[in-house]
Length: 312
Image (cartoon, rainbow, N blue to C red):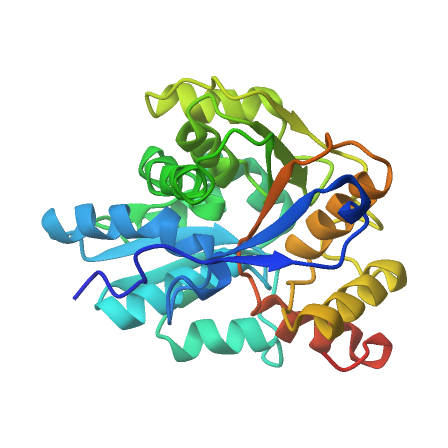
């Protein structure tokens, strides 16, 4: 069966945070628990597409990503679990046989093709990439991060589930991390004008307010809910080790029992706590942060920065 995810994800209250003196309640929407195989919000992005591809008898998916990509990990897992062939064009000129993410991709049956960064950055106009695409003429070409109109459609339920869980008239602030902005766009559409959305990019490139609005419009949704992209919590850059951020993530795990991923949700939650400390949210607000999963990213972090990590 295609549908093996839970119907909706729970909202875990975080009882200790800097906004308690304002009567603010903080919740973490646990999309890390969404699907047993396809991690976190990646299932929301992929499940409608997988149904459509199966209906059209498309044999496989060809997608793009870096050597530690959560997205490629999810595509490979979905392909193995649901019987789709998968292939990946990887940023980088060689395959590292010790990289745990690449080991998983290959064990799941994904064909992996590394290309130099210069070719990768050119996208499908690159002759190197075109040559690989021609090897899989019947495959669906899935953009990096799984950002499609069906991906936005699949993420609309995030906002809808939050509205259903918090129907009262308390001020509502929803926080979501972002890589491409697809999840943020779906969440924005699902909120339907309610509350305020705060988007926390994990990198200083790839997503901004205009991109999120563009995703909404292309998928046929209105971006009625006010939203803001918060660029203040990028730390050392995308997928870089930060001692300050790691200490926060470790402390959060000790206090709540919840593990954040090292690239997206850790930055978001650090930012949420900092904004609470600074009094950004009105008294008596409900703040709901979305845990988008991505926990496989810890395998890559341990491989790259093991000596610097505390045990999580």
